[in-house]
Image (cartoon, rainbow, N blue to C red; front, side, top):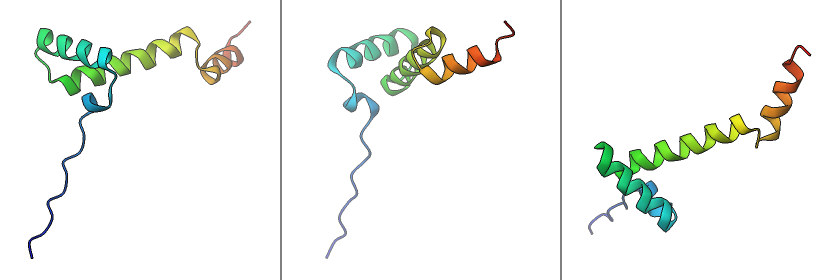
Length: 69
């Protein structure tokens, strides 16, 4: 009996929304990246922007505690 082939892991593009995936594909073509790399970069930028804007409560609280005033 032959062994079953394992499925390849899903790419990040497959789990993204339609608009996010199309933006990642456009960005990838423009910059010479793979769509997965472009989507990863976009998601990292969103996470970092959220921390800067104070959308995550813990980072905002930490900044207030360490402020000298």
